[in-house]
Length: 247
Image 1 (cartoon, rainbow, N blue to C red):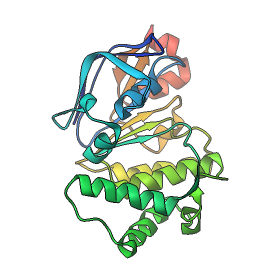
Image 2 (cartoon, rainbow, N blue to C red):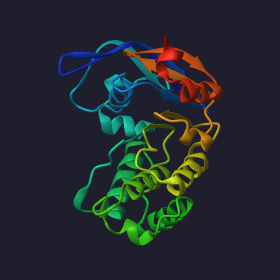
Image 3 (cartoon, one colour):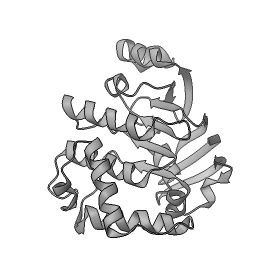
Image 4 (spheres, one colour):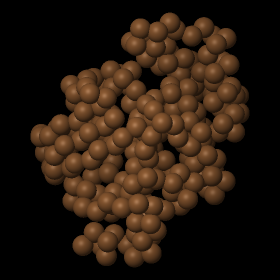
């Protein structure tokens, strides 16, 4: 589904990704772990097409397409979802309005008919229930006045509604308490644990992986993947730290 080959990228003239290679197949969950400054968020933003992140070498193929040749909205329509470490607030725009416009824009780009207001609300209620998220919250402005945990749960509702093929989740566990972590983990499994979908889960800690067990764990250091293993690698990192494992 996703093939990254010898990827190099700079931010503000500084090289962050230095020859990163990674392959993610359909039905797989891959966890990316690594120390601060290793390039984890840079990888997520490069895949999402965030401005200011310049690719200087390598390639990224997504379902046979050149992902790097697509604009961000085209990547979303192709089935890529990017979950942010710090979801932004959008005053004056309700979640319901934002999500219906986003979903219908993607459906139009794929040649599908847009959903009516009634059809969309039915879908939104279904996905909100997975995350135990009150529909009244979806009527509020996007993330305005939400706690950190509410923002992450709202973002997972977005993911459920948009129904991507590949979810790139950048530190989704950041800011979550114990209960919210479990709910978000269960939501990721319910939405994305399917043979035709895949997840690239960026995290610092083992705790989310207790709920979303990865097929592969990769250690990213100095802009490249230096070690790959199974779920046991995350537990080893938790016990011994990055320096011992990635040395």
